[in-house]
Image 1 (cartoon, rainbow, N blue to C red):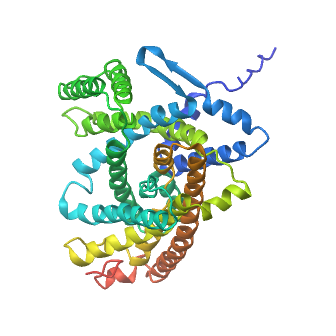
Image 2 (tube, rainbow, N blue to C red; image 1 turned 30 degrees about the horizontal axis):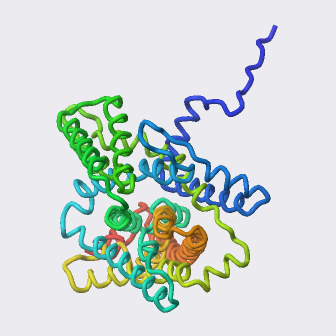
Image 3 (cartoon, rainbow, N blue to C red; image 1 turned 120 degrees about the vertical axis):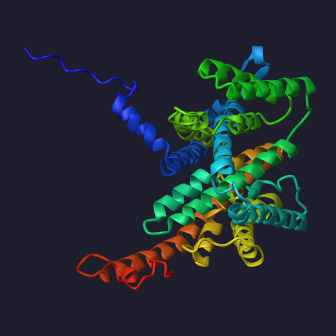
Length: 433
């Protein structure tokens, strides 16, 4: 008698090997960016389908936690709550760069810091110029300043087969500094009705968090309730609650003690990055990217001053800001461009920096109180990001073909021992001694 066949549970928990494979995949920027893109596409299709009313009802449905003084819509829970997890990961990455990465010394940090600073200032300037010329509101000046690291790295990873690894490193460092700028802008310019007692409580919670880290206290049961309390106090204090995630990420210890396999920051990042990439950011995109793409709405992106300013800021401002910032830093300071990169590579990366999805949508919601304006600005962010991704793909694919041809020619020059001729002449593959 044969054993009964085991039934597959619909929507049940995946077996451990599959779960592990999915988790590992979500730790890569390529997969995270593709999940984010899929969520945005679902939002657009759903919001423009016959079931758009159901989308709006779910997005605007309110529920809360009375004990924490919270009563938010689903869209606000994803923007203020789930995005705090994304910003926690961003805070950890920033801390790692400051302690052990490209930003730890002024010499190595100068180029990406100047490029990122120009890449924020120039798009903001373009927004102000275009919006002013059209008689529009200047409230959205910060929208085109931020680069979406997940989207940008995903596009780069899909395009790149032979591009230098230094290009990805440069983009990652640039985006970390860019994220820091966006975090500071949200903290300084998007606060309302500050509650001193709540902010004092949040600060006290961060002090306790810091002390626990210094005392090497371990155990999620300490940090998770404390983190939720800090987040709730920050929200009730009038400061955007995602700042709590950044602050905790910066506090987490990034150096290993003797006997530790990984630091606490690396351990937390390893565990929550899949949730951030696979749940938190896609859900935010699902309820933030659902805008009308009717002919009238698309026309207003190119005619209304605010969305047009966002579009030009992302596509033109980001490109000019990052490229000119990099060139000026390499020309007039001691900072040097990585010898593995050419200026054509930097141009492609500068265009790619115009992908401003997650944080740009968030700042768009914070900048305009009128729903119709928010919808048009969101449409401009989507169109601008897709345009930047398309143009960057054209440039970087061409550069990829150049590097691929050089790689193939180098292999053809190899002798019978398999050693390329460049090594026999005493030169490195990039032509330097």
